[in-house]
Image (cartoon, rainbow over all chains, first blue to last red; front, side, top):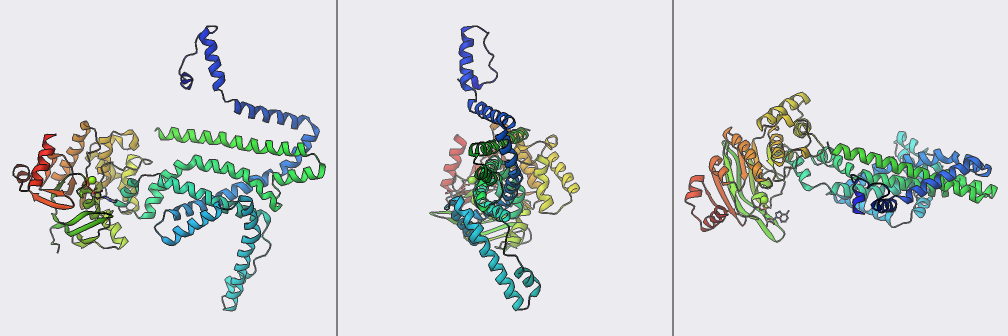
Length: 293
Length: 248
Ligand SMILES: Nc1ncnc2c1ncn2[C@@H]1O[C@H](COP(=O)(O)OP(=O)(O)O)[C@@H](O)[C@H]1O
Ligand SMILES: [Mg+2]
């Protein structure tokens, strides 16, 4: 086995007894799981494009792709910001921010994601909206009518797509916070000390010295969480957001073609996640190459 | 307490860590242009003393003046005084994600607000001074330990410091690289830069030090000129330490 990990080993001559052994080991070490996935995907695509019921299901469900993708992308960007701020809060010397960020992370960690999505969409967001409106009315009463009028005019009906994005980014913000915290803590103390000894402020040292190194270290973990988020975005279908999961559900309910709908749905997710993990491997390789400068 | 030709005045400095008195009443005056070498066994408080001078460590009690200015808790003052004190660490602590030039120009630009051109010019001058201008565009990982430490010295010098602190700058180096770093430090000493150097390099102490300070258990045991210190030390603890160092 060991010799196979070394790509430089020359294959033995064909038809020699060593060659059979070499072939056996090589076959055993191949990523069969990957070939299987690719085979499944190809087979399903062939089915989708040759079999009329599957084709219909696919054409119907793909209408949800843009919602799935934009929800994930926007929510991930917000989660990155929230996660970075919370991660910085977790390691901060400021008692208030430290406790606030820890509270947030622990709350989110202790509640199932599906429950969180319901809670944020139907309790959290209406609560915040009502609070803001009450604040606006109070401001108007005490004479600050500009901001007051603007706040009290907020519509009650926050669109479900927006609620979905807020719910996903709030949830993932807590996960990403832990990644950022670990990344920052992985940078040796000497880096901060060197920067501070040159007269940089804490934030300058963070911005120019610690974070660039920390973020580079956590890129693979962030990529993994992006893929997880793409999958977890299916949960927002419970808010009647028309992502691919919701649309597949609708299609299955209407046509009773459960197999066609859910096989197509599963393959769509699988295709996206596999493409993304290839993209990540590619980016990681690029970064590694850069580091060997 | 601090006269015009004093660069550092330390008075009855104490630093307490849980369970240990790392500095137990240290008083020391460093005059402008002086080179002070600090010797002492491991754990005697040498690093803590240097780190209190640029406030990487917060003192428990006592007073410190740098160039006549008394150190306070004011974070603006702390940042300003740190920018005027160069520190060289045992493990170099170069910024690995930046090139050698970027390592040397960054703090000039964001702390001292020097223009990019001036900062670059200054950086190249400092790199020439430490003898490796050809490494300007390399990354730290591509340099030998000795070269990295010379870049770290250049990085500190580029801030035009009043005072340089060296904490065992050659202890992490392979033997063949110690000389190139010591030569650079010797040049700085000759150029009249005020330096406090923690090192076990006796050759450097003899050649460059105006005074040698021996520390043990958080206190200064003996302070003397190199000649007196190495030929005729007063205290038993100093003699013991010297015999251990010279015999190994
Ligand atoms: N951050 C710290 N926390 C607790 N104890 C420390 C810390 N830094 C240093 N010490 C202790 O203070 C004493 C002096 O340490 P140090 O100044 O590093 O000694 P030296 O540099 O002479 O070897 C040692 O006993 C060390 O263990
Ligand atoms: Mg030390």
